[in-house]
Image (cartoon, rainbow, N blue to C red):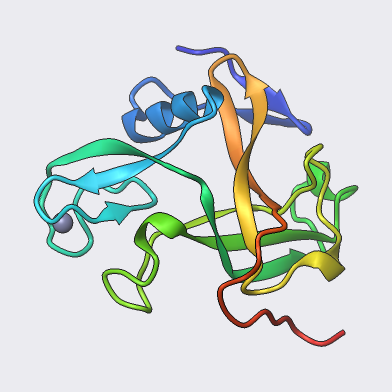
Length: 168
Ligand SMILES: [Zn+2]
């Protein structure tokens, strides 16, 4: 059993029998973002569920992805539930549509990964910088020798479509 990790006053433990997330976080610690690829239809999926959500096949392999994508949606955490996050609030959480499978299998169902939007030194990004349509890349927050969290940070790539956010 791996050592529990202390993070912001909380104990993080990914048990040995949690094979899906253990491997995902181990890849993240090596600074690789991986998702599952269906052996039958070839579509990528996240989170790493047992069966393909589109064709229900049970075969899969890990597939490394670029971690580059577009903010599909976001939220601002104003009142943190966990005490350890209170000093970070307000902070943005983003749902990122990855480039590898943009708009597939349908425009409404694509490969999307959730994470915090952070600065390159892993502080929360400014609320005013968050917008749907902005370009991001993955950045890894190392927590222990066997565990890192994929987060996202803004890039200066031009957006492909409309950029918008809730008005202040
Ligand atoms: Zn499939």
